[in-house]
Image (cartoon, rainbow, N blue to C red; front, side, top):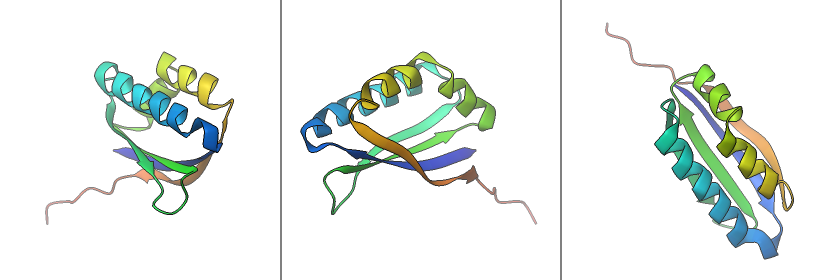
Length: 100
């Protein structure tokens, strides 16, 4: 599993716009991209202008498919006009439990 956490800083007058477009991207990606497993939109508890996207994919190839797809492009076409980011906070592969 390939996972990452990114942050975006959003201009105050566009907070609702960011949440709307991020949640739409999440719904569309999860419904139509078989390698997309989780896509969460999280509001920072202290800074109302800071949002996180926590995403999980089957593997790096599945993320690259998402990144090359229409939902990713539509998200950045809109959010890129009023949000700074992404700032990569974490990315990597899940270390699975192994049988002893």
